[in-house]
Length: 526
Image 1 (spheres, rainbow, N blue to C red):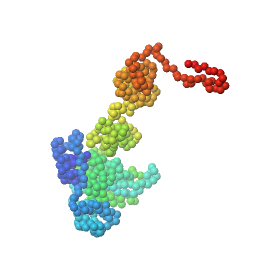
Image 2 (tube, rainbow, N blue to C red):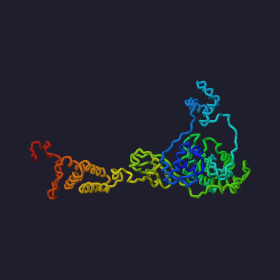
Image 3 (tube, helix red, strand yellow):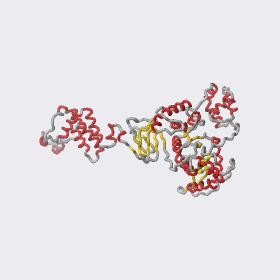
Image 4 (cartoon, one colour):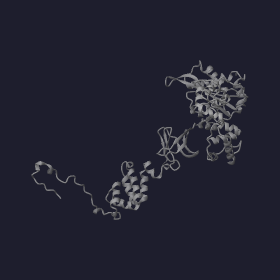
Protein backbone atom coordinates (compact mmCIF):
# COMPACT_ATOMS: atom_id res chain seq x y z
CA UNK A 1 0.00 0.00 0.00
CA UNK A 2 2.89 2.39 0.80
CA UNK A 3 4.57 1.72 -2.55
CA UNK A 4 1.33 2.22 -4.47
CA UNK A 5 0.79 5.56 -2.72
CA UNK A 6 4.35 6.71 -3.59
CA UNK A 7 3.92 5.80 -7.27
CA UNK A 8 0.45 7.38 -7.38
CA UNK A 9 1.67 10.69 -5.97
CA UNK A 10 4.62 10.61 -8.40
CA UNK A 11 2.28 10.13 -11.37
CA UNK A 12 0.13 13.03 -10.14
CA UNK A 13 3.12 15.37 -10.40
CA UNK A 14 4.42 15.62 -6.83
CA UNK A 15 8.13 16.05 -6.21
CA UNK A 16 10.20 13.43 -4.39
CA UNK A 17 10.55 15.73 -1.42
CA UNK A 18 6.78 16.24 -1.20
CA UNK A 19 6.16 12.51 -1.58
CA UNK A 20 8.58 11.70 1.23
CA UNK A 21 7.08 14.36 3.47
CA UNK A 22 3.50 13.18 2.86
CA UNK A 23 4.12 9.43 3.08
CA UNK A 24 6.81 9.41 5.77
CA UNK A 25 9.32 7.64 3.51
CA UNK A 26 12.92 8.76 3.16
CA UNK A 27 13.81 10.38 -0.13
CA UNK A 28 16.37 7.69 -0.87
CA UNK A 29 13.64 5.10 -0.47
CA UNK A 30 11.34 7.14 -2.70
CA UNK A 31 14.07 7.20 -5.36
CA UNK A 32 14.45 3.43 -5.11
CA UNK A 33 10.72 2.88 -5.54
CA UNK A 34 10.48 5.27 -8.47
CA UNK A 35 13.50 3.68 -10.14
CA UNK A 36 11.85 0.27 -9.78
CA UNK A 37 8.61 1.70 -11.17
CA UNK A 38 10.44 3.04 -14.23
CA UNK A 39 12.04 -0.36 -14.79
CA UNK A 40 8.55 -1.88 -14.78
CA UNK A 41 7.48 0.52 -17.51
CA UNK A 42 5.70 3.13 -15.42
CA UNK A 43 6.11 6.81 -16.20
CA UNK A 44 5.23 10.12 -14.63
CA UNK A 45 1.82 11.38 -15.76
CA UNK A 46 1.25 7.93 -17.25
CA UNK A 47 -1.41 5.29 -16.63
CA UNK A 48 -1.63 3.79 -13.13
CA UNK A 49 0.19 0.49 -12.48
CA UNK A 50 -1.56 -2.76 -13.23
CA UNK A 51 -2.23 -5.36 -10.55
CA UNK A 52 0.77 -7.43 -11.65
CA UNK A 53 3.03 -4.38 -11.48
CA UNK A 54 1.74 -3.56 -7.99
CA UNK A 55 2.51 -7.11 -6.80
CA UNK A 56 6.05 -6.90 -8.22
CA UNK A 57 6.60 -3.56 -6.49
CA UNK A 58 5.36 -4.93 -3.17
CA UNK A 59 7.71 -7.90 -3.45
CA UNK A 60 10.70 -5.53 -3.52
CA UNK A 61 10.36 -5.22 0.24
CA UNK A 62 8.59 -3.09 2.75
CA UNK A 63 10.27 -0.07 4.19
CA UNK A 64 9.30 0.86 7.72
CA UNK A 65 10.21 4.49 7.97
CA UNK A 66 10.82 6.27 11.22
CA UNK A 67 10.23 9.96 11.84
CA UNK A 68 13.16 12.22 11.08
CA UNK A 69 15.30 12.95 14.09
CA UNK A 70 18.14 15.33 14.81
CA UNK A 71 21.17 13.61 16.28
CA UNK A 72 23.06 16.26 18.29
CA UNK A 73 25.05 15.82 21.50
CA UNK A 74 22.93 18.37 23.36
CA UNK A 75 19.65 16.76 22.28
CA UNK A 76 20.95 13.36 23.39
CA UNK A 77 21.46 14.78 26.87
CA UNK A 78 17.77 15.75 26.98
CA UNK A 79 16.47 12.31 25.99
CA UNK A 80 16.48 10.87 29.57
CA UNK A 81 14.31 13.81 30.67
CA UNK A 82 11.73 13.44 27.88
CA UNK A 83 8.89 12.19 30.11
CA UNK A 84 9.60 14.80 32.79
CA UNK A 85 9.62 17.63 30.24
CA UNK A 86 6.33 16.43 28.72
CA UNK A 87 4.77 16.32 32.21
CA UNK A 88 5.90 19.87 32.98
CA UNK A 89 4.51 21.18 29.69
CA UNK A 90 1.29 19.15 29.44
CA UNK A 91 0.14 18.58 33.02
CA UNK A 92 1.65 21.55 34.88
CA UNK A 93 1.69 24.03 31.95
CA UNK A 94 5.08 25.47 32.89
CA UNK A 95 6.85 28.04 30.78
CA UNK A 96 9.91 26.88 28.90
CA UNK A 97 12.20 29.18 30.90
CA UNK A 98 10.94 27.53 34.11
CA UNK A 99 11.61 24.10 32.59
CA UNK A 100 15.17 25.22 31.86
CA UNK A 101 15.59 26.31 35.49
CA UNK A 102 14.27 23.00 36.85
CA UNK A 103 16.61 21.06 34.60
CA UNK A 104 19.50 23.18 35.88
CA UNK A 105 18.53 22.32 39.46
CA UNK A 106 18.85 18.65 38.51
CA UNK A 107 22.35 19.23 37.16
CA UNK A 108 21.51 19.51 33.46
CA UNK A 109 22.57 22.91 32.13
CA UNK A 110 21.31 23.23 28.58
CA UNK A 111 21.04 26.26 26.26
CA UNK A 112 17.56 27.66 25.84
CA UNK A 113 17.63 27.34 22.04
CA UNK A 114 18.55 23.65 22.32
CA UNK A 115 15.68 23.07 24.74
CA UNK A 116 13.35 24.97 22.44
CA UNK A 117 14.32 22.82 19.44
CA UNK A 118 13.83 19.68 21.54
CA UNK A 119 10.36 20.83 22.60
CA UNK A 120 9.42 21.65 19.02
CA UNK A 121 10.58 18.17 18.06
CA UNK A 122 8.13 16.72 20.60
CA UNK A 123 5.30 18.68 19.00
CA UNK A 124 4.98 21.41 21.67
CA UNK A 125 5.12 25.14 21.24
CA UNK A 126 6.30 27.28 24.16
CA UNK A 127 3.56 29.29 25.82
CA UNK A 128 3.45 32.95 24.94
CA UNK A 129 4.96 32.40 21.47
CA UNK A 130 2.14 32.60 18.95
CA UNK A 131 4.26 33.67 16.01
CA UNK A 132 3.31 35.86 13.11
CA UNK A 133 0.15 35.27 11.13
CA UNK A 134 0.82 34.82 7.44
CA UNK A 135 -2.08 34.78 5.00
CA UNK A 136 -1.77 31.84 2.66
CA UNK A 137 -2.16 32.27 -1.07
CA UNK A 138 -5.56 31.18 -2.41
CA UNK A 139 -5.75 27.66 -3.78
CA UNK A 140 -6.78 26.97 -7.38
CA UNK A 141 -10.42 26.06 -8.05
CA UNK A 142 -11.25 22.45 -7.21
CA UNK A 143 -7.82 21.86 -5.69
CA UNK A 144 -8.38 21.53 -1.92
CA UNK A 145 -11.23 20.66 0.43
CA UNK A 146 -11.02 20.62 4.23
CA UNK A 147 -12.91 18.23 6.51
CA UNK A 148 -13.67 18.49 10.22
CA UNK A 149 -15.98 17.15 12.94
CA UNK A 150 -17.88 19.21 15.47
CA UNK A 151 -20.26 18.28 18.25
CA UNK A 152 -23.61 19.84 17.36
CA UNK A 153 -25.76 18.89 20.34
CA UNK A 154 -28.26 16.39 21.72
CA UNK A 155 -31.10 14.89 19.68
CA UNK A 156 -33.94 12.58 20.76
CA UNK A 157 -33.80 9.11 19.21
CA UNK A 158 -37.43 8.05 18.52
CA UNK A 159 -36.51 4.35 18.55
CA UNK A 160 -34.91 4.30 22.01
CA UNK A 161 -36.64 7.32 23.55
CA UNK A 162 -33.28 8.66 24.75
CA UNK A 163 -31.23 11.64 23.67
CA UNK A 164 -27.89 11.07 21.97
CA UNK A 165 -25.01 13.29 20.93
CA UNK A 166 -24.98 14.33 17.27
CA UNK A 167 -21.76 15.18 15.45
CA UNK A 168 -21.48 17.23 12.30
CA UNK A 169 -19.21 16.26 9.41
CA UNK A 170 -18.33 19.46 7.55
CA UNK A 171 -16.53 19.77 4.19
CA UNK A 172 -15.51 23.15 2.77
CA UNK A 173 -14.03 23.88 -0.65
CA UNK A 174 -11.26 26.35 0.13
CA UNK A 175 -11.54 28.32 -3.11
CA UNK A 176 -15.25 29.17 -3.16
CA UNK A 177 -15.91 28.53 0.59
CA UNK A 178 -18.96 26.48 -0.44
CA UNK A 179 -19.65 23.99 2.37
CA UNK A 180 -21.59 20.84 3.18
CA UNK A 181 -22.85 19.59 6.58
CA UNK A 182 -23.79 15.98 7.37
CA UNK A 183 -25.07 15.13 10.89
CA UNK A 184 -24.07 11.70 12.20
CA UNK A 185 -23.84 9.73 15.45
CA UNK A 186 -20.48 7.94 15.30
CA UNK A 187 -17.10 8.86 13.82
CA UNK A 188 -16.53 5.41 12.34
CA UNK A 189 -15.02 4.59 8.96
CA UNK A 190 -18.37 3.53 7.50
CA UNK A 191 -20.25 6.60 8.76
CA UNK A 192 -17.52 9.03 7.69
CA UNK A 193 -17.16 7.62 4.19
CA UNK A 194 -20.94 7.66 3.81
CA UNK A 195 -20.91 11.36 4.71
CA UNK A 196 -18.05 12.08 2.30
CA UNK A 197 -19.93 10.36 -0.53
CA UNK A 198 -22.97 12.52 0.27
CA UNK A 199 -20.70 15.57 0.03
CA UNK A 200 -19.44 14.56 -3.43
CA UNK A 201 -23.06 14.17 -4.54
CA UNK A 202 -23.79 17.62 -3.13
CA UNK A 203 -20.77 19.18 -4.91
CA UNK A 204 -21.25 17.00 -8.03
CA UNK A 205 -17.56 16.13 -7.95
CA UNK A 206 -14.48 15.53 -5.80
CA UNK A 207 -11.54 17.80 -4.97
CA UNK A 208 -7.99 16.87 -5.89
CA UNK A 209 -6.79 16.99 -2.27
CA UNK A 210 -8.66 16.49 1.01
CA UNK A 211 -7.29 17.87 4.28
CA UNK A 212 -8.36 15.14 6.66
CA UNK A 213 -9.34 15.67 10.28
CA UNK A 214 -7.13 13.70 12.68
CA UNK A 215 -9.44 11.12 14.27
CA UNK A 216 -8.72 7.44 15.07
CA UNK A 217 -10.77 5.94 12.25
CA UNK A 218 -8.87 7.93 9.62
CA UNK A 219 -5.35 8.43 11.00
CA UNK A 220 -3.18 5.62 12.38
CA UNK A 221 -1.00 6.39 15.39
CA UNK A 222 -0.48 9.58 17.33
CA UNK A 223 2.67 10.91 15.69
CA UNK A 224 2.30 14.72 15.81
CA UNK A 225 4.91 15.29 13.11
CA UNK A 226 3.99 12.60 10.62
CA UNK A 227 0.26 11.70 10.70
CA UNK A 228 -0.51 8.69 8.52
CA UNK A 229 -3.97 7.85 7.13
CA UNK A 230 -5.35 4.38 7.75
CA UNK A 231 -5.44 1.81 4.99
CA UNK A 232 -9.21 2.06 4.63
CA UNK A 233 -9.05 5.80 3.92
CA UNK A 234 -6.08 5.39 1.57
CA UNK A 235 -8.10 2.86 -0.45
CA UNK A 236 -11.07 5.22 -0.44
CA UNK A 237 -8.96 8.11 -1.73
CA UNK A 238 -7.52 5.89 -4.45
CA UNK A 239 -11.02 4.86 -5.52
CA UNK A 240 -12.21 8.48 -5.68
CA UNK A 241 -8.98 9.83 -7.19
CA UNK A 242 -7.97 12.50 -4.65
CA UNK A 243 -4.99 12.72 -2.28
CA UNK A 244 -5.18 12.70 1.51
CA UNK A 245 -3.45 15.31 3.64
CA UNK A 246 -4.08 14.48 7.33
CA UNK A 247 -3.95 17.36 9.79
CA UNK A 248 -2.12 17.13 13.09
CA UNK A 249 -3.86 16.51 16.39
CA UNK A 250 -5.24 19.68 17.99
CA UNK A 251 -3.77 21.89 15.25
CA UNK A 252 -6.69 23.97 13.93
CA UNK A 253 -4.36 26.10 11.81
CA UNK A 254 -3.75 23.10 9.57
CA UNK A 255 -7.34 23.54 8.28
CA UNK A 256 -8.32 27.16 9.01
CA UNK A 257 -11.15 27.45 6.46
CA UNK A 258 -13.27 24.65 7.91
CA UNK A 259 -12.71 25.76 11.53
CA UNK A 260 -14.66 28.97 10.93
CA UNK A 261 -17.50 27.11 9.22
CA UNK A 262 -17.76 24.70 12.18
CA UNK A 263 -18.60 27.55 14.54
CA UNK A 264 -20.93 29.10 11.98
CA UNK A 265 -22.86 25.83 11.45
CA UNK A 266 -23.28 25.17 15.17
CA UNK A 267 -24.53 28.67 15.91
CA UNK A 268 -26.66 29.35 12.82
CA UNK A 269 -28.05 25.90 11.97
CA UNK A 270 -28.21 23.68 15.05
CA UNK A 271 -28.87 26.06 17.91
CA UNK A 272 -32.52 27.02 17.95
CA UNK A 273 -33.45 24.42 15.33
CA UNK A 274 -36.16 21.77 15.66
CA UNK A 275 -35.46 18.28 14.32
CA UNK A 276 -37.67 15.19 14.42
CA UNK A 277 -34.87 12.67 14.05
CA UNK A 278 -31.46 12.22 12.43
CA UNK A 279 -32.90 11.84 8.93
CA UNK A 280 -34.85 15.10 9.32
CA UNK A 281 -31.70 16.88 10.55
CA UNK A 282 -29.83 15.70 7.46
CA UNK A 283 -32.56 16.94 5.12
CA UNK A 284 -32.64 20.33 6.80
CA UNK A 285 -28.81 20.53 6.74
CA UNK A 286 -28.77 20.05 2.95
CA UNK A 287 -31.31 22.82 2.39
CA UNK A 288 -29.52 25.12 4.85
CA UNK A 289 -26.19 24.69 3.03
CA UNK A 290 -27.79 25.77 -0.25
CA UNK A 291 -30.22 28.45 0.88
CA UNK A 292 -28.44 30.02 3.87
CA UNK A 293 -24.73 29.17 4.05
CA UNK A 294 -24.28 29.24 0.28
CA UNK A 295 -26.12 32.57 -0.13
CA UNK A 296 -24.38 34.53 2.64
CA UNK A 297 -21.67 37.09 1.99
CA UNK A 298 -18.50 35.40 3.16
CA UNK A 299 -16.52 37.45 5.65
CA UNK A 300 -13.16 36.93 3.91
CA UNK A 301 -13.94 36.75 0.20
CA UNK A 302 -16.95 39.12 0.41
CA UNK A 303 -18.65 36.92 -2.19
CA UNK A 304 -21.51 34.43 -2.22
CA UNK A 305 -19.97 30.92 -1.88
CA UNK A 306 -22.63 29.20 -4.00
CA UNK A 307 -22.28 31.73 -6.82
CA UNK A 308 -18.48 31.41 -6.87
CA UNK A 309 -18.80 27.64 -6.81
CA UNK A 310 -21.24 27.52 -9.73
CA UNK A 311 -19.30 30.02 -11.86
CA UNK A 312 -15.66 29.17 -11.17
CA UNK A 313 -15.10 25.92 -9.26
CA UNK A 314 -17.58 23.20 -10.21
CA UNK A 315 -16.01 22.60 -13.63
CA UNK A 316 -12.59 21.93 -12.03
CA UNK A 317 -13.72 19.16 -9.68
CA UNK A 318 -12.90 15.52 -10.35
CA UNK A 319 -15.86 13.55 -11.74
CA UNK A 320 -17.91 11.46 -9.33
CA UNK A 321 -19.73 8.38 -10.63
CA UNK A 322 -22.36 8.38 -7.86
CA UNK A 323 -21.81 4.70 -6.97
CA UNK A 324 -21.69 4.21 -3.18
CA UNK A 325 -18.29 3.05 -1.99
CA UNK A 326 -17.98 -0.44 -0.52
CA UNK A 327 -16.03 0.22 2.67
CA UNK A 328 -13.34 -2.40 3.28
CA UNK A 329 -12.17 -3.50 6.71
CA UNK A 330 -8.47 -4.31 7.15
CA UNK A 331 -7.39 -6.48 10.07
CA UNK A 332 -4.22 -8.27 11.15
CA UNK A 333 -5.04 -11.91 11.93
CA UNK A 334 -3.19 -15.08 12.95
CA UNK A 335 -3.87 -18.59 11.68
CA UNK A 336 -5.30 -20.73 14.50
CA UNK A 337 -4.36 -24.38 15.13
CA UNK A 338 -7.54 -25.42 13.27
CA UNK A 339 -6.19 -23.70 10.09
CA UNK A 340 -8.79 -20.89 10.31
CA UNK A 341 -8.68 -17.17 11.02
CA UNK A 342 -11.36 -15.24 12.90
CA UNK A 343 -12.70 -12.07 11.26
CA UNK A 344 -15.79 -10.22 12.53
CA UNK A 345 -16.91 -13.30 14.52
CA UNK A 346 -16.73 -15.58 11.46
CA UNK A 347 -14.16 -18.26 10.54
CA UNK A 348 -12.27 -18.57 7.25
CA UNK A 349 -9.77 -21.29 6.31
CA UNK A 350 -6.18 -20.56 5.28
CA UNK A 351 -3.96 -22.83 3.11
CA UNK A 352 -1.94 -25.15 5.34
CA UNK A 353 0.86 -25.42 2.77
CA UNK A 354 1.73 -21.71 2.74
CA UNK A 355 0.09 -20.52 5.96
CA UNK A 356 0.64 -23.03 8.79
CA UNK A 357 -0.79 -22.32 12.25
CA UNK A 358 0.78 -19.24 13.79
CA UNK A 359 1.26 -17.38 10.49
CA UNK A 360 0.33 -13.69 10.59
CA UNK A 361 -1.86 -12.52 7.72
CA UNK A 362 -3.62 -9.35 6.62
CA UNK A 363 -7.35 -9.66 5.97
CA UNK A 364 -9.42 -7.35 3.78
CA UNK A 365 -13.21 -7.60 4.17
CA UNK A 366 -15.73 -5.85 1.97
CA UNK A 367 -19.43 -6.41 1.42
CA UNK A 368 -19.00 -9.64 -0.59
CA UNK A 369 -15.48 -11.04 -0.21
CA UNK A 370 -12.77 -11.72 2.38
CA UNK A 371 -9.21 -11.69 1.04
CA UNK A 372 -6.19 -12.98 2.96
CA UNK A 373 -2.73 -11.55 2.20
CA UNK A 374 0.68 -12.79 3.26
CA UNK A 375 3.53 -10.29 2.85
CA UNK A 376 1.44 -8.38 0.31
CA UNK A 377 0.59 -11.45 -1.81
CA UNK A 378 -2.97 -12.75 -2.09
CA UNK A 379 -3.21 -16.30 -0.68
CA UNK A 380 -6.96 -16.93 -0.26
CA UNK A 381 -10.37 -15.52 -1.18
CA UNK A 382 -13.61 -16.43 0.63
CA UNK A 383 -17.21 -15.23 0.33
CA UNK A 384 -18.19 -12.97 3.23
CA UNK A 385 -20.04 -14.80 6.02
CA UNK A 386 -22.30 -13.38 8.76
CA UNK A 387 -21.44 -13.53 12.44
CA UNK A 388 -21.10 -17.14 13.54
CA UNK A 389 -20.62 -18.32 9.95
CA UNK A 390 -17.80 -20.41 8.56
CA UNK A 391 -16.15 -20.74 5.14
CA UNK A 392 -13.89 -23.78 4.82
CA UNK A 393 -12.08 -25.05 1.73
CA UNK A 394 -11.24 -28.78 2.16
CA UNK A 395 -8.07 -28.30 0.13
CA UNK A 396 -6.75 -25.96 2.83
CA UNK A 397 -6.44 -28.82 5.33
CA UNK A 398 -3.41 -31.14 5.44
CA UNK A 399 -4.18 -34.18 3.21
CA UNK A 400 -4.06 -36.63 6.11
CA UNK A 401 -6.71 -34.69 8.07
CA UNK A 402 -9.24 -33.86 5.39
CA UNK A 403 -11.48 -36.90 5.86
CA UNK A 404 -11.87 -36.48 9.60
CA UNK A 405 -12.11 -32.68 9.56
CA UNK A 406 -14.76 -32.66 6.84
CA UNK A 407 -16.62 -35.70 8.26
CA UNK A 408 -16.33 -37.50 4.92
CA UNK A 409 -16.81 -41.29 5.32
CA UNK A 410 -16.74 -41.82 1.55
CA UNK A 411 -13.29 -40.27 1.32
CA UNK A 412 -12.03 -42.56 4.08
CA UNK A 413 -13.44 -45.63 2.29
CA UNK A 414 -11.69 -44.62 -0.94
CA UNK A 415 -8.41 -44.33 0.93
CA UNK A 416 -8.96 -47.78 2.44
CA UNK A 417 -9.70 -49.33 -0.98
CA UNK A 418 -6.42 -47.90 -2.25
CA UNK A 419 -4.60 -50.01 0.37
CA UNK A 420 -6.43 -53.24 -0.45
CA UNK A 421 -9.86 -54.63 -1.42
CA UNK A 422 -10.46 -56.38 1.92
CA UNK A 423 -9.43 -53.22 3.77
CA UNK A 424 -12.03 -51.33 1.75
CA UNK A 425 -14.70 -53.91 2.61
CA UNK A 426 -13.76 -53.71 6.27
CA UNK A 427 -14.02 -49.91 6.17
CA UNK A 428 -17.45 -50.09 4.50
CA UNK A 429 -18.71 -52.48 7.19
CA UNK A 430 -17.17 -50.31 9.90
CA UNK A 431 -18.86 -47.11 8.71
CA UNK A 432 -22.20 -48.78 7.90
CA UNK A 433 -24.02 -47.23 10.87
CA UNK A 434 -26.75 -44.62 11.44
CA UNK A 435 -24.05 -42.10 12.47
CA UNK A 436 -20.87 -42.99 10.58
CA UNK A 437 -19.13 -39.83 11.85
CA UNK A 438 -18.94 -41.42 15.31
CA UNK A 439 -16.65 -44.13 13.87
CA UNK A 440 -14.29 -41.90 11.93
CA UNK A 441 -11.62 -42.25 14.60
CA UNK A 442 -11.72 -46.04 14.19
CA UNK A 443 -11.47 -45.56 10.43
CA UNK A 444 -8.41 -43.36 10.89
CA UNK A 445 -6.93 -46.05 13.14
CA UNK A 446 -7.53 -48.62 10.39
CA UNK A 447 -5.54 -46.55 7.89
CA UNK A 448 -2.70 -46.12 10.36
CA UNK A 449 -2.52 -49.91 10.77
CA UNK A 450 -1.78 -50.14 7.04
CA UNK A 451 1.13 -47.76 7.48
CA UNK A 452 2.45 -49.66 10.49
CA UNK A 453 2.02 -53.30 9.41
CA UNK A 454 2.09 -52.85 5.59
CA UNK A 455 -1.07 -52.93 3.44
CA UNK A 456 -0.52 -56.60 2.45
CA UNK A 457 -0.59 -57.90 6.01
CA UNK A 458 -3.54 -55.67 6.93
CA UNK A 459 -5.49 -56.80 3.86
CA UNK A 460 -4.99 -60.46 4.86
CA UNK A 461 -6.00 -59.72 8.45
CA UNK A 462 -9.13 -57.90 7.25
CA UNK A 463 -10.03 -60.88 5.06
CA UNK A 464 -9.70 -63.20 8.04
CA UNK A 465 -11.71 -60.89 10.31
CA UNK A 466 -14.49 -60.55 7.74
CA UNK A 467 -14.60 -64.33 7.44
CA UNK A 468 -15.57 -64.49 11.11
CA UNK A 469 -17.85 -61.44 10.84
CA UNK A 470 -15.50 -59.57 13.16
CA UNK A 471 -15.70 -55.80 12.56
CA UNK A 472 -13.64 -54.32 15.35
CA UNK A 473 -10.43 -52.36 14.80
CA UNK A 474 -8.97 -53.21 18.19
CA UNK A 475 -9.42 -56.97 17.65
CA UNK A 476 -8.12 -56.58 14.12
CA UNK A 477 -4.93 -55.15 15.57
CA UNK A 478 -4.72 -58.15 17.94
CA UNK A 479 -4.83 -60.43 14.91
CA UNK A 480 -1.84 -58.60 13.49
CA UNK A 481 0.07 -58.67 16.77
CA UNK A 482 -0.63 -62.22 18.05
CA UNK A 483 -1.75 -64.25 15.06
CA UNK A 484 0.76 -63.27 12.41
CA UNK A 485 1.42 -66.94 11.45
CA UNK A 486 -2.18 -67.26 10.28
CA UNK A 487 -2.31 -64.11 8.19
CA UNK A 488 -1.78 -66.01 4.93
CA UNK A 489 -4.41 -68.74 5.52
CA UNK A 490 -7.69 -68.41 3.63
CA UNK A 491 -10.87 -67.89 5.54
CA UNK A 492 -12.77 -71.12 6.35
CA UNK A 493 -16.01 -71.95 4.49
CA UNK A 494 -19.25 -70.75 5.99
CA UNK A 495 -20.29 -74.24 7.17
CA UNK A 496 -16.96 -74.76 8.93
CA UNK A 497 -16.77 -71.46 10.69
CA UNK A 498 -16.23 -71.76 14.40
CA UNK A 499 -18.86 -69.70 16.14
CA UNK A 500 -17.61 -68.20 19.39
CA UNK A 501 -19.64 -69.36 22.40
CA UNK A 502 -20.48 -67.05 25.25
CA UNK A 503 -18.24 -67.73 28.21
CA UNK A 504 -19.92 -69.02 31.39
CA UNK A 505 -20.39 -66.47 34.04
CA UNK A 506 -20.14 -68.94 36.95
CA UNK A 507 -18.28 -72.24 37.18
CA UNK A 508 -20.61 -73.63 39.87
CA UNK A 509 -24.39 -73.51 40.07
CA UNK A 510 -26.04 -71.20 42.52
CA UNK A 511 -27.11 -74.04 44.84
CA UNK A 512 -23.47 -74.74 45.62
CA UNK A 513 -23.40 -71.66 47.80
CA UNK A 514 -26.73 -72.26 49.58
CA UNK A 515 -26.28 -73.75 53.07
CA UNK A 516 -29.56 -75.59 52.78
CA UNK A 517 -28.02 -77.81 50.17
CA UNK A 518 -24.60 -78.05 51.79
CA UNK A 519 -25.10 -81.72 52.76
CA UNK A 520 -26.05 -82.68 49.24
CA UNK A 521 -23.02 -83.26 47.05
CA UNK A 522 -23.00 -81.22 43.89
CA UNK A 523 -21.57 -82.66 40.75
CA UNK A 524 -19.63 -80.12 38.77
CA UNK A 525 -19.94 -80.48 35.05
CA UNK A 526 -16.63 -80.58 33.25
